Length: 344
Image (cartoon, rainbow, N blue to C red; front, top):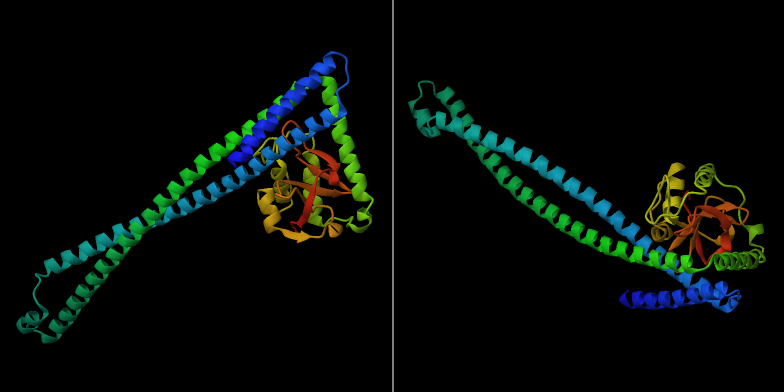
């Protein structure tokens, strides 16, 4: 990880130098070298991809923290229940001891010998023995409860310790994300308006080229064209989010990251799916690309760091990256890893 960050730093610096060169060329009226512009584009893609990977890891860590908080809450609830039981048993044990004390603690055999009514004495002796046994049972239960309480308290403390460690790791990851995003935004803003326009045009041409190549395989004749009822609801939700900004870690309603959009779209359709693209790829049913249908999720890149919802006609809706907005775009504009089906 450290090596990758150092590499990232060198690449970012090199990209900034390239951007400055492009800006200078633009100011002097010269046209930038297309190869240099392509290199800047690739640097930008690399930076944003690294930011998205870090975002996905942050989301996964956040999910674990939430789960840990729920477990700690459950343990705390069990501790409170045990403490209530402990208080009750203490009260009962004390009451039993006081009752025996009030009875004088006279042995059952002596009570029988002195009693004017031997039958009643036998009943009293039986009750005394039962009380003694009940008291012993209460005390045994009391010791067990104390031990259980101690164990649960230790477990809760251990959970809290792990929780704090997760939060520290998450904060560190957040810093990494912000640095990646800042680098990419600085690189883009350093380009002159003319070069930014050319860069956007270059991105579109590469996207169109990749889409044309994908469609030339005849894939659109194989894929499904009809979504399920819940799939249509998920798509309808995604359509309504078009134009909202990408914000890392966001899951609506005003902004989204890629998996925040897909998870909320399917939640709106009544289906709960994992929060991150990595977990969506790991846990949802895989279907062949040629068998996908509208509503399915397309997972991108070898590390499953990006996800979009397929809306049909060869297009997707996604939250692309920082600085961009939720939009509809060609499905093959990025490297497809595979397809998953939330409503399988």
